Length: 251
Image 1 (cartoon, one colour):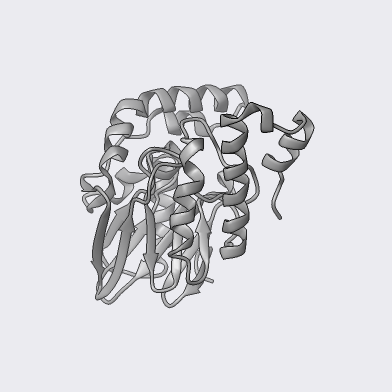
Image 2 (tube, helix red, strand yellow; image 1 turned 45 degrees about the vertical axis):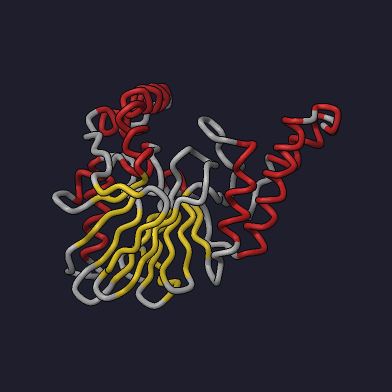
């Protein structure tokens, strides 16, 4: 392990952070590398950039899995590199970035967290290389594929695949229930079903430990059950049973 990185494939790394239990990814090729998500503010982005430099000196490209602050407010630390994201990710960040910032800063200040001022001054720097459904990047001679499989955690989630490793962003989460603030719960299970068809090995969730196909399938089934409850109230189990099923903490 180098600078907190765990190698889960051939020159494919994940770095799991104490802050928000967030995962960032790194793919290293010959003469280039790809950074997957950039953390919550410029300071965290710079720390991530330093950690990348502990692994490789190669020029970097960045991809944002979606437009939430904890995955993309560190983008400016990697400029002038290209930053890839879904077309709607850029739109969502333009539209909601300041609102996200205000909400996060309020919560951090209430908790007395000094990171509040760092988030308050973080540049909002949307992706400038935009994906609709599919893009293939050449990362130092390695093919990395970016796919939008449908709406789920947001309207603009990307999954990133290289060899047999899949970075799922927050379409998959370990350790806490999937976050629903601006989600599409009636569509999420279908999107994860499409994701499952791509799984060939480790799956890196947006937060928590690296998981496998069985974990993803179980989470998909819970999301499908939630959609059923939302569309057919008569099928809704007692409240405590529903809460237990959807809020199960994963080890």
